[in-house]
Figure 1 (spheres, rainbow, N blue to C red):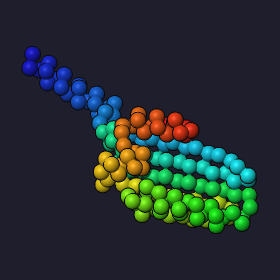
Figure 2 (figure 1 turned 90 degrees about the vertical axis):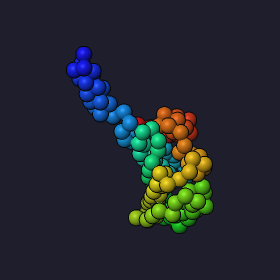
Figure 3 (figure 1 turned 90 degrees about the horizontal axis):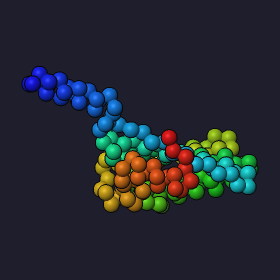
Length: 142
C-alpha cells in the first residue's frame, strides 16, 4: 500500500512536470492594419509563470510609402511608450528607423508591478483572460 502511494505521488509529480502545469507559457498576439500607404504591425509577446504575466515585449513597426512620414511615425511610437500608461511602469524602450520602417520595442517587467499597475497596462488576469482581451481587440493570438 505504501509503495502504491509513493508511486502514485511520483507519477503525479511527473505528470505535472510533463504537462507544464505551473510552468512557463508564452502568448504571442499580433495585429496589423494598412491605411494610406502605411502598414502598422503590433506584436505582443507575453511570458506567464503559474498563469500570471511576468514579462511583456511589445514591438510596433510602421512601414511608410512616403519617407516624409517617418518622423511622424517615430514620434507617435515614442509618444505611446512615454505618455501612455506604459511610461508609469517602464522606460525600457528603443526606437530605430531603417529605410522606410520605424520599429519600436518596449519591455515591461511585470513581476515588479502591483496588480493595479498591471490593470493600467491591461496585463492583469490569467493567460486566458489576457488572450481573450487581445483577441476581442482584433489581435490574433497563438
